Every structure is written in structure tokens, then in C-alpha cells.
Image (cartoon, rainbow, N blue to C red):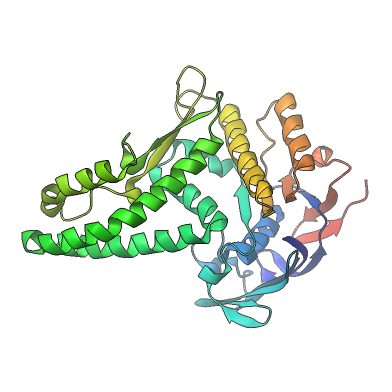
Length: 345
């Protein structure tokens, strides 16, 4: 899928904006000019919420009571997606019909890469789990349904565990249901991380935060063996909600501890470019949003990133402070003080 047209009204710094896009698109301008807000609008149309805030009302232009963004997408189907923004709510519409955010996820795969994604390497495990969930939810609808079921069962299990020993039978029944869905999630995550791993960037998966074998018998044994301890603690101590992974460089050293910021940025780029390649292999071309990734990369790596962005089949949008980074195959836009105009080089 491709977004060919974006309309934004009272969104962030933009009063009224209408833009037509190409296959490769670049936005340049000073900090705080609105470059990232364009990426945010595209992301919200594909994912249903912002990557910058949990409060949709914060995306409404200062001093205004409402706003909206609308995008026209084409590919296998034509999709007209509109997100209406109000102080206490939002409404998603697809081709004029009301839709839920869950129904939107996966229709138009989208990935956002920025310097903040470095925290995926050295931040808390939740950030790495969120990354896996975003990728797999857009790659496999069954994963999304299994993961939502897992969260429901986990809430039920924790509620039962909070009641103490008298709920042990209920916990055992829930564990039987958790077994199948947990194995599906673990195997999906294992396959993805195995695909991303290579000799120079080895990824070590830790199901439930541990190095364990993902097999029916071993998982059964672990679930059964932890029941008494879980009842004492009052919450689940084992499952995909505790997963983690580590990215190792040559020699087995962790990138989160033994790498410069520039090196970590390069590793994150490699991970995301491999993910884009995986979607391309499955003929599900995503939209790739790249925000200020070139700074802190040396000249060789910065050129390599630009060449890869030019070569991939996905539709690309990237921002930069330096207009010299914009190459001939990118449609260029200058962003300044909340206004956007095409730039002829």
C-alpha cells in the first residue's frame, strides 16, 4: 500500500495542509518546524495512534478545539482513512465507515524509525516486547488475535492468583489455556528474531526473560512448578509478558553496553531494514518513516543508509536537518514554521 495524498487540519503546527506524495519523500528544515509531525500524521492513519503521545488531544493545534487528518491509500484496494480528533475522543473512519483501531492494524503496515528507537537496545524489556508485537501484529493477524487472548487470560490468572490458595484449581485451568497461546507467541517471536540475527548481529531470545527451550513439555513443567510461588506472590511469574532479547556484536558483547551511539543507531537501522525486507518478500509493502537517522553516522554508513532507502521497494519518508542529504530520486519538501512547500533542486 502507498499513501498518495495527506490532508491535515489543526494537527500539531499545521492549520491546513494538503500534500501529494511519491515513492520516496524527504522533508528538510530546522528543528521544531513540523517535519516529524508529517510522519506522525501518516503513522496515525496506519496505526490508529501517535508514536509521540498517549493523549490524542495533544495532537490538536494549540488554541483549537478539534482537528483531523485524512489520507488516501492505494494498492490492492483504495482506502480513504480519516482520524477525527476531539479533546476527549477520536473517531476512525475507513472509506466513510466507522472503524476500530484493532480493525485498522495490519491494513497498511507501517514502521517508524528515529533516534529514540535506540532505547530498544538499552531500555527496559517492555520496549523490546512492544517492538516484537508491532512487527508481528502487522505481519500475522493470527498473532494479534493470539496476543490479545493471551493478555485476557493473563488478567484472569492474576485475578485468580490474588485470591490465594483457594484459587489453585482455577489457575491450573487457566494455565492449560495459556499453554497453547503462549507457545504460538513464543514460536512467532523466535522465528522473527532468528530471521533478524546474523554473524555480525546475533540476537539472543530470552522467553520469559530466561534462556529456556520452547517446547511443550518444558513449558508445562515450568508452569506447573511455579504455581505455589505465583500464589504466594499473587501474580504470574512466567509467560510471554516477561520476554526479552539481547543484540550481541562480534565476540558476544552486548550492543546495549559496549557500543557508541552511532554504532547502536547503525544496528537499529539494520534491524528495521531487515524487517522491511521481510515484508517485501511476502509482497506486503509497508510504509517506512525514518526520522533524523543520519546524524551521528559516519559518512560511509550515512551513504549506505541513503542507498538502501533508495533501493527498497517500500514507500519511504525521511526527515533531515540538512537538505544536502536529499538525493535525486527523492521528492523533496521544505518544512518551515508549520508550512510545507515542494523544493526544486
